[in-house]
Length: 286
Ligand code: GDP
Image (cartoon, rainbow, N blue to C red; front, top):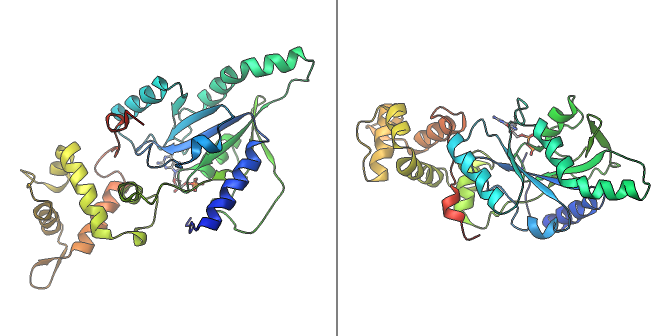
């Protein structure tokens, strides 16, 4: 799904989310486990200020498990409940109801004291495009109620989707924009496939990705592309991968676009293993 985020669209998205938040008890903020900070909306705290929230680190199946564990500790330290999940297979989803009940116990106990009839917890899934919102709703609902992708301009009445007896979700998620004015954020979103390559320069995204892999996962690079020593200069690394994979144009010149496409495709399809492109260490003061 591609959304062009103009100021008018952002204001509208924010308004829609604010309206939905009034209807619910708790927000499930979906982020990409590989880039938990870059895949968040920059104004999320302000937008959902008054409601309890659980951060769901989705696509944990694609992320580096050791780093995901660090992220869970990071959120824990900030008193933000967080769970690592895989919306596609359903890993971790049971914890969502358990934790929601825990977080809302006081509120529901108070309602019971006032004689209000018990009801299911109402939740809203929020996140940037492609983070897995529809997949998660479908998985929780155990049937296809939301179509993947949105239909601009079509307003439908809010509907609730039952998740067992104790939880219900709004059937349409809250869609918010990423912090794309930050170039590094853009590179991370592009590397993981959250945004289309056409928005940024393909070779620049690949230079970012290769530099990151060189620093954090040198052995994966060596193994995947049969490289003995990773060259210091990123262009030399680009050349070596291009040569190894036959991405050359006539005269033996490296085809950098073709090499970029190959590297990015292989990263996104987990050919270099499970990778995380953000580590909590770099976000301590935020
Ligand atoms: P939305 O735009 O937030 O609703 O995102 P979608 O639900 O359409 O998901 C975007 C892409 O991510 C789809 O190709 C999904 O199959 C994929 N996806 C969603 N959740 C997961 C997950 O937990 N693991 C993996 N590997 N892929 C996922």
